[in-house]
Image 1 (cartoon, protein in one colour):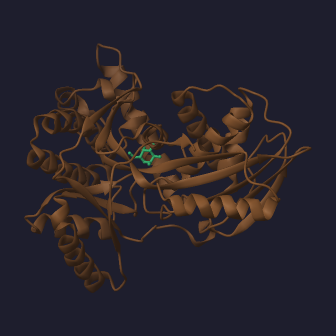
Image 2 (tube, protein in one colour):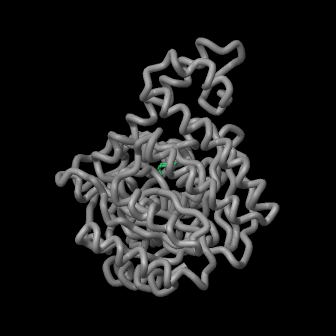
Length: 398
Ligand code: GLA
């Protein structure tokens, strides 16, 4: 956690509202290491909370008014309680409003509050700055208004806020990862039971994140944390997975409530009866789930090379089956494939832009980052950014 960031937030809050905050909460972003779009298919994911996040300072205020200061934008917005619906602008405030609405259904949020937040997660990089804001807000509000909520409930509140107040039908991956991170470990989540385990990482492994700085967004949505075009492409993929799952439920003689319940053999037996696009979307999810289980076993056995190979396979499936990649992501993965120091590489998160995560020895990170960055600028005429990210502790009240 960036302690200077937290100090800046506290000072800005004190300066603006005339007294130090009553509560400060911090929530990290996340990186998805393996398990792409498997969360809402009740499958498996390996992820990590990262050492970049969002801090939020909070104080009580009289009356119904709530004031939220976003230091990074910078912008200040006021609204009155109760919060019942999202607003058209600015879109970022809907993450806060959504949490107020969902948490408010479990306890009393009144009178109003004053909040100040800032973060160091690059927006649009696929590192879940939106979930970090939701979770930091939910943690701080729950503490201030003395609303008892277990971590899994907090994650669901963040997800519901995002689903209903921003229109993104995201799963629970981002919120669960932000809450359950641990240093030097990956988070393994079963999204049916919602059971979370941590899997230790070997010291000779680190992750290098290469951000394409491409968002494939529509200009009108530029102020959203999650660009509008990406939201609709994401929701499309989710709908296709649901269609595939309903089809398999109708032809298989065992219960199917999600693609998690469909095996590779079953896909081979029936996929020809699906339209080709839906069949490919289902293939991505079915084999991605198998890859996560296999990779978790390999990680525990210390076979990082075979683990990395599954990351490359995951990207290939995103590129060809799920079609949630883009030329910039594909180029970075192809470059990474040429470098023997890189153990594995794949797009991380929703896709359609954002970042590639590479797995490698920390001693190779600088050299690999420079090689890829210079090939990238040569090819696309604009820069990408590279940074080593470390699995970090989960969200908390400070
Ligand atoms: C986004 C969503 C998550 C998950 C990933 C893809 O980050 O918010 O719920 O679906 O995409 O794995």
